[in-house]
Length: 489
Image 1: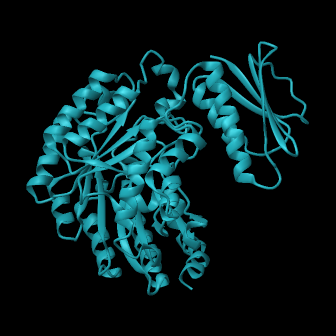
Image 2: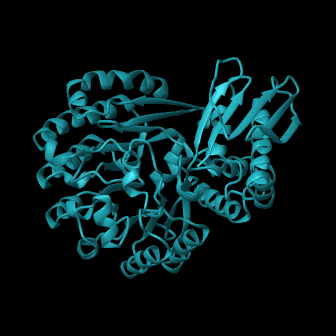
Image 3: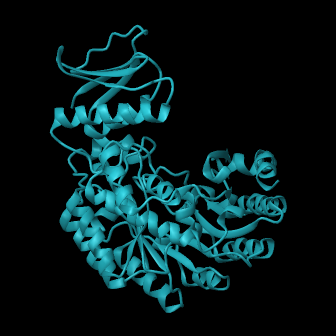
């Protein structure tokens, strides 16, 4: 593990450089500082970024000796986007030269790489020209270029089927879980500690939902997504109360998709599925993450592989015809053989969509906080494993339809949603491509207002703490009011 320093002479584009360095050296300590600051750190590898009026110089010093220096001409003050692209190509090319490796996504550091081909498609570019642009400008591999361009085309076709710019989507957050998984970074709360607060939480949540409907006026609701946490931690009567309130509050005449992320098999019962079937919910998730029992035990999932299979068949027999399953690649102790086993078991169930996540070790997770306990376990992901998941999805008649990346993602790969022809998750596309305003209700929920065809994004956050959310619900409504008024006028 190296101790790496990055020195800048100006405060600009630090995150892009830092992210690229971290991608090449994921297990190293990376620190940033500025040339005009007092700094006493000693680094085995030091990288210097110097912005001039019409050029950028990038220098790499290893163990006190300069090993590489490159520069590129660019008018720093006139074109920020071009300056950033030039800098990233400079840094990326240098790191490839030093390490002898390339990254599947090249120098792209953002979490939404498909936004690039999507924008170019909307501007009338041909697929072949977009592919050339992805490879030449960002150094993206042929495989990832093909994936991004194909997804952008599918997303564009789906979004053209309705007037998404004049509508909105609704996210409803249930922040409770049966237990907190080792890798989880979401604002989830163990139900056992909060069970007496759930009804009060629903009181506040329903108040927020009523407010959203009243304020949105003539704007049409296009998709509804109930997530968490785990929505099915609610008891059947609580679940019915929530779904009834949504049904009686909002106009569903333009709703294209209604998802309930049932999620954890240990939270799903026949009675809860019966409640969901009473409403026009047309998409649910039953998420195993892995079909290896040893891994489930390690990551804190309090259910068995058999539970997942039983609940899936129960949902299918009750008439649910669009079921998604989530998998995580790179879980502790899992390699090619374990992933292959999971894929074989999922293929037997044959869901309509499959979301494949590469594990991201976020700072807030217990897996990261206590990573010393798991040092002897592998966190394995590879191009071969990702190709296995793609081939499995294709075997089940699915194609990729959305994609996003995360910080510290295993193997510098991505999260991909696969679905059958008419089963793509519209909400997932809307939120990842930032094409539509998402009104979000609940503790920790993040509302995203999209203005000027996506040129401007404004966010309004709800507090994460459940008690604070309940006590400060009126404040949460006022936080939304200004954004909604700006959006609907």
